[in-house]
View 1 (cartoon, rainbow, N blue to C red):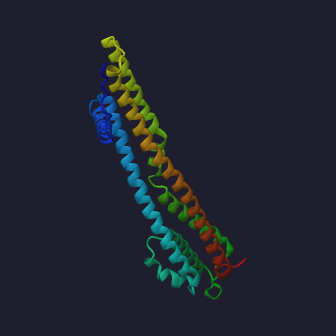
View 2 (view 1 turned 180 degrees about the horizontal axis):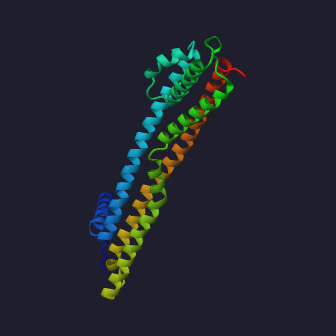
View 3 (view 1 turned 60 degrees about the horizontal axis):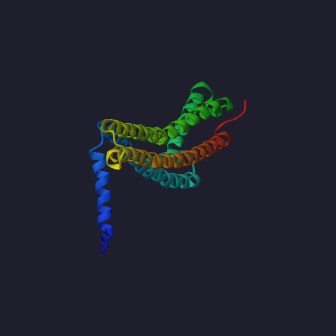
Length: 247
């Protein structure tokens, strides 16, 4: 008796079959699953776009902050710094400085209009206004940094559940075909199981990078917040020593 063995499929054929099966599962999926996959793909693409643009923006801010702080500590006066501030448009520390400097000018002008020009040093009571102005500027800059991070958080938290919806729908379709045909062989259930697993995979593929990016940027923004607060404290100390007096 002669026994013939079929030749083992080549790796190229196996890969082609797998690729074809995945593409076929997507194109032949029910419309709710296809809509789910389209939504997840859109969320993933948007998340990657936010991640890349946010990284570029933060890198620019960090570089600009280094240059501005070098100017700040080397300059002879606040007026000299203010004259050069337009050279650092990307520095959020420069924006905080601008807010503090302008408030300091308002306090000084108010003191000149009310009191004796020979004793035109603002009282310490005006320091509260300066502190509030700096705090507001810091909050504005942090809000800018946090812009669009909510979408990353939403994608990271809801992506797997949206994928799960596609998974459940695909499995329901598989069971429906079993009931309609009365057969439970692989040919009947494979299409439904395939679209179900693909929905799960794309849901995770959208959620995992978004979660990683959100956690990374949250840490970076926290460091930026501390740096802005430290600069605000330094500015207040300089103003208190040089521009304010006790009653």
